[in-house]
Amino acid sequence: MLTLYYSPGACSMASHIGLEEAGAEYESQPVLLAKGEHKTEAYLKINPRGKVPALKTEDGVLTENTAILTYIARRYPAANLLPKDALGEARCISTMAWLSNTVHPCFTHVFRPERFTSEESAQAGIKETGKRSFFANLQEIDGLLAGKEWLQGAQFTTCDPYALVFYSWGTRIDLPMKELKNYTAWKDRMLKRPAVRKILEREKNPLLQAA
Image (tube, rainbow, N blue to C red):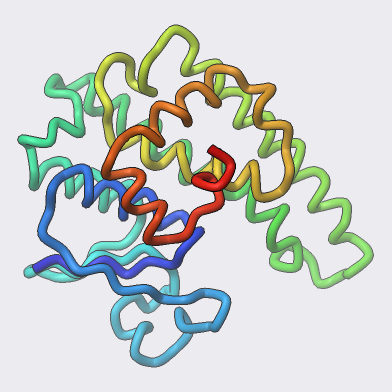
């Protein structure tokens, strides 16, 4: 059986939703970042990088949302979580890589500015710059959703759970998310999906309270 190691509110929510959407049989194991559980000897044996998510499979451990979500989609093809054509699949993976490599780091500058400088006096500037960059990325997501039901068009894919992470984080830092009309309407569609709601309830995500 698969085991997902996740932390409520972290980016691991993407893989958590992906497993549920796929109809996979899995166990979910919380690793509470706020309590430092990702730094324990036991967890570092699972993921030496000390991050979530990590997915334990019968053949070893996978890390990184982009890899985990792609693995889930290919392992459970009946769930139709990736486009069938090669170019469509590549575009979907490209979008997930952008979410991981560009959008996520901007938020890290907001939430963990101390990772980027040891000078306390510089942290406020790093945080503010990160906030502007993060919102610019969310505006780009809003543009990508114009005229579409889901990020890749008519098909719900692995990109959609990943993008929900960042909408959630935008509300966490009080960005004007409702100005992003396409993104907000998409978020409302996401919240109507039973698998999404199940994971948000399990992780006690504030998006459910705001709905």
